[in-house]
Image 1 (cartoon, protein in one colour):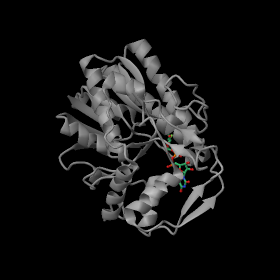
Image 2 (cartoon, rainbow, N blue to C red):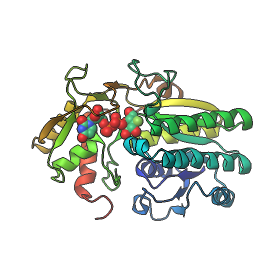
Image 3 (cartoon, protein in one colour):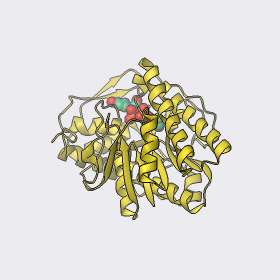
Image 4 (tube, rainbow, N blue to C red):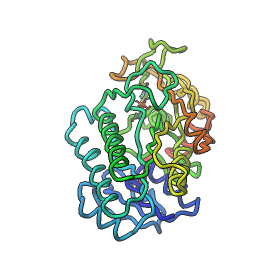
Length: 330
Ligand code: UFG
């Protein structure tokens, strides 16, 4: 297959590009490089530097490259920033996706795999969370992903657009080769921050609340390794291409979670030096426990995560940050 990977130069996109090529697919990347990196891509991959807000340009790219399917990662992803700058998020994530959907149905009517998020559920009592749980996003970020999911459903109904929506839980880790990994300008994710703290780039780790109703009092999250997530995209796009799937939404997670303390303990065990920890107030909007019910993707697509051991997950993140202490700016 020939795939157009939109946002392919980003963290999850670049790992997916690698897995797609390993599975024998041809890849063209469309990315505006606002947060992606050319260095995260194989040197021989065609990169079209373009913004989804350039509707005409996107249509032209689909016509010029004639892909068999599109995988759409491109989005602004910071929850806090989305609350301060909603217009940017609605414009970039919703209008940008609308332009892409319209260009697809007007040119090639090919299948779409879309990156969604557990943030569409908001705070829920369901543990683990099934795909049919109530959706009440608490952030503008989650809202933009839910709005895009709804547009995709409407395009499926009106134009027969085949799609798979993947709702990611806490994506983490890095390619085991250690040459690509998480490289966001603004670091907020627990495992990445712990690795950078262990490297001495930060003084200490803050634990945002230890009075949650969980066994050790800290929040529990379902940490899915980026390489397993990349495999989920390969499975999804192949199921669409073969006609096995026409329209489906899947959670992507391990189906079990780890607490903040367990993650920090894993980093301590890895480096042999305990991280300096400080208790801080709860962070606004953090639900106590977010764990995927991932049975549907296992059953339908045969998803089988390889990284289920926390120590191993953290090790890949540590390897990447240790060899690239300034991300791609070596
Ligand atoms: N945490 C700390 N200290 C830190 C950073 C994080 O205690 O320095 C805690 C958080 O409070 C939370 C947990 O570690 O309880 C995980 O936090 P992350 O920031 O790593 O991830 P989130 O769970 O907030 O969010 C991530 C993505 C969202 C996505 C969500 C889905 O960033 O986009 O997972 O589960 F929606």
